[in-house]
Length: 197
Image 1 (tube, helix red, strand yellow):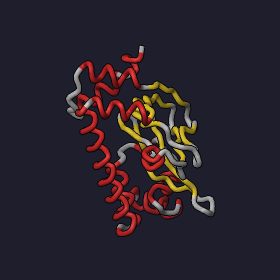
Image 2 (cartoon, helix red, strand yellow):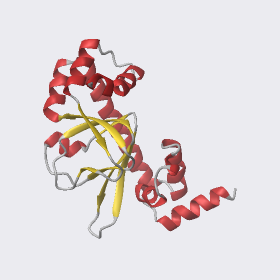
Image 3 (cartoon, one colour):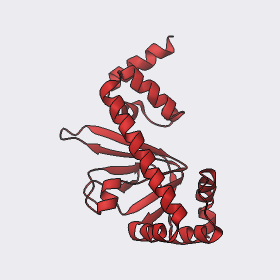
């Protein structure tokens, strides 16, 4: 039953103090598509249009792309109890430059742009929450960009550990290095230095 699949979302929205009525939540649940994905499964490939807004009930995803030399750059990690999408492709319904991949077996709720737009029009509390989420993501992206151009590799690592507690047990170091924009050698040196303190 879809309402059972949406219990994590309901709990999340309650914690975020989004004032949704039972009728509102029934509409949101009815429009959701449940998807169970395996580790390493791609939800979006570069060149495709991102057609879904995603709530991660359980699991862990990453958004990444490759540069002209084939180097991988991770833009975002998205853990359970969070939302993700590839915003530009989703909003404009244009081909994406990014990939979205499951880093662990994951359980997802997904909404097409048309169905989510209808929900936003019908449920003011969801619209307000969605706008706040976009604002928060923009703020986090700007902070990350500032740190990328101003912080030392050690400061980037410290911030990463604070932002994503426990992540070092869940992803390979090469992915952390990719996210931070430092070499694996540099990251290894930083971690060894911290362990010796």
